[in-house]
Length: 270
Ligand SMILES: Nc1ncnc2c1ncn2[C@@H]1O[C@H](COP(=O)(O)OP(=O)(O)O)[C@@H](O)[C@H]1O
Ligand SMILES: CC(=O)N[C@@H](CCC(=O)OP(=O)(O)O)C(=O)O
Image (cartoon, rainbow, N blue to C red; front, side, top):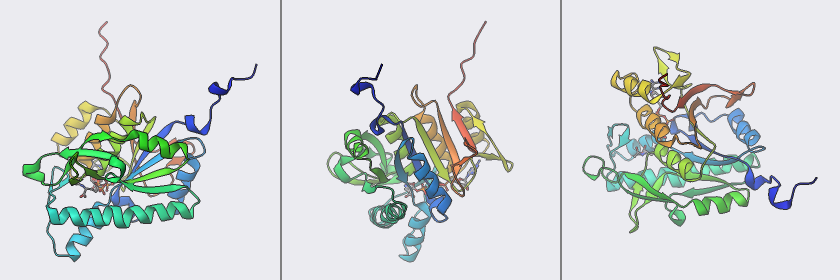
């Protein structure tokens, strides 16, 4: 018996994968990495969220503007915000979109300010200034683009309900998008193979382990918002989040190499 039309699996039913590309790996973005995104698109729909921390640092240095980090987040004055937006939305977003277009991927560059894609509010105005946390994601806009087979490429600049732009850590933006769009997979692609402890890769980490590693300062700096964003994103739909390296293909022999962050295991009392 043939399937009814409504039951047919079309491209629009393919699972959604959210891939966060860290600024740390964008500098060394390899052909093979771009190829693996192409490969992924044969079975999945893809949304890319990118960072750009190192590029923002370079531009701030060039322009002689100082900025500091607090718990892995950039303290953002009005001047820093303007430069961060220029680098993220102006430079990196368009470069990435162009690279994907060269690979014949239908990429569309957006920032969280376009179509109120990332509605945000101040995270901690006193300590961080113009830094946002995500309040709402315009998932309808994303779904409309996915229906047209576009790969949205998103810069992490948010906008408040009354139109103030805010700088958002890209890991947090990716996690909120993955959650809202009911993604099947969330990948954080960075410049290290995953969470390392004494130089060794931790293949699987739970919330309890991560809390301990932060306390022991094994996890520090930019890895802190990444693991926190990963834990925040875990849900019934998204059972694990991967941190992987962008130096190579995402998959090796069909397997993803990196740290798998999973939900706290239930203790079964017999
Ligand atoms: N335990 C850890 N294992 C691996 N990397 C860590 C760890 N703790 C801190 N880091 C740092 O986190 C960095 C990745 O975070 P970040 O620089 O913010 O990357 P991205 O730009 O990809 O988000 C690594 O390059 C490393 O310096
Ligand atoms: C608030 C905050 O810290 N925003 C980040 C946004 C870019 C980012 O997250 O880039 P990575 O993914 O390369 O770290 C920043 O200004 O660096």
